[in-house]
Image (cartoon, rainbow, N blue to C red):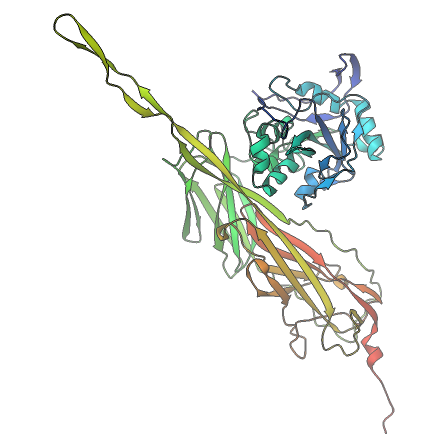
Length: 579
């Protein structure tokens, strides 16, 4: 049974030096753990119990954004040539940060008060009660506050959380490496499973199960799966390898409905992917595979031949085209076996082309205008998912059936009339897929601007805007779509009030976009007119590229580019007396 408890009041901490001290518990630890036996290593691929640490990041609770540089605490002396991925937290990765390998230059903090064992091994399990007590101890919290540059009273006023991530230091392919569970899952995806094949008991069992949540927090779910079995990259990225310390008890979240209705938003006339998770307590085999059926707008889409090992799950999806008119549609989902994460989905189909900018005029003014800050809207540039398959592992066993054959004279002999029986089992195989979306944005004066010089022009003229995208993936076409829409926002409208849509000029995974023709343009140009009153300086439009779909959700990338405004188009007018 998983342990469930909160931490308040005074605790006795069992320190690594076998001394006992009385300490005040400042925070509430939302942490549980698990693990199992470790496999046998070799000189090229190995890990030793105790070679671990914890990455700590201060998170602002209101918007779930990191407010400190992640700090790595350990009891160990780390070699200078350590291979690592820098100081990036699970939330940074969730918000779109990329996995970036680094050789050397690793910065870490030797804990003043020794950290308890974080990662379990078969012979040396960690103690979750000691871990909780340590990371909620007032003196430890004060040390973390000092290292993060945040005042202790501010850190513990209820507006912040500590995000904890276990780190493992181990040898992989002969090199000393250090990484969190999230980084190990991402790295295994890059290596197409080679990390898992060499270090599975560490990277896909004891490291991710060293910490997980007892209850949801910071938009991460509580872990309800096994605390001892090996786990997938998708499960690690979604739910494992983290603990959270909060500093004031908040009201508990409302209980989830028995059958939750998930609401999605899609654009009209767009190819989208709708997905759910199918989980099972018993294995689903190729002899009796599962089927999941999606029903929407009078049509049904059935996904067949789904196999899942015991106690695991898999994302299941279908690709479909949304209607051309805005409306609400309901998607019903059913399965032949297993449990679905959703059985009904409400999809809101919206039309983006509803708020283009008004017609600019030569007499427009905005004397109170202040240049707004460029938006930092959420984006998701990478996605990961996977699919189970299974193959039969034959194990032929002789089943004896000895029969006595008498000879009639009191003698006889035994004959084995047995038979061979295949007592094999299903071996399950996980195939990982990833996708990433990138884009470039070009803003330049329209070709018809008479006095433009490079990227400098007078206000009041039009600008051209072009976006080129690239979707990279190892997945088949049935898993993904290229980017399908791009939306431009402008500083004169505070990047919100009005927007302008692009036309997709070329589709596919290398989609290219240009602004739609402007109905106020004399020559029907694909331009946006800068306001004549815009002050001299930088003019920087902002574009969101959306609707690149995967089973792991929609990819979105946000880009901007700028031109220089100098004077206005009145400067190009010459007024002379009539002859």
